View 1 (cartoon, rainbow, N blue to C red):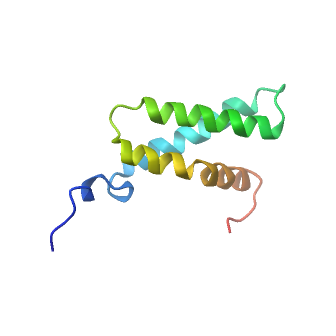
View 2: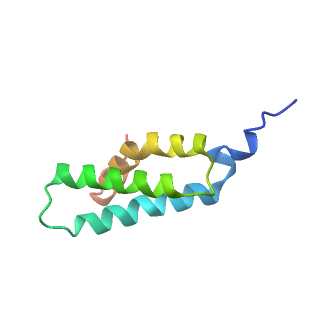
View 3: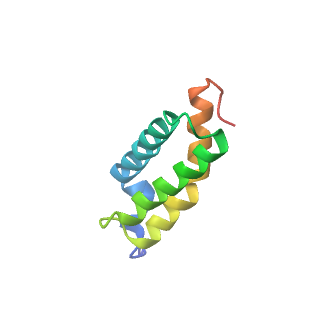
Amino acid sequence: MRRSKFYNYTLFNKPENNLEYGLIVVKVMETIDNVKSLSGSNKYIVAVRCITEIINEAKSIPDYIKNDFILTIPGLIEAVIQLTKGVMLK
């Protein structure tokens, strides 16, 4: 079976990328949560913008993987919020 040239760069084959991505999302959310002057929806908007900027600045991640990371930001933020509240993920 011939593998695609992208096989070695998929998210599932680079666990260090997934771990770093998850940690970045959690750290950004923790930092923005400490800004008391922002409402919940504004915190979400700022968090998405910050995480997107961090991903776009990463030189070690190919562009097509950056796009995958950026597409998953809202879902990951929602999952982190649910987990911090003790709610089971759907």
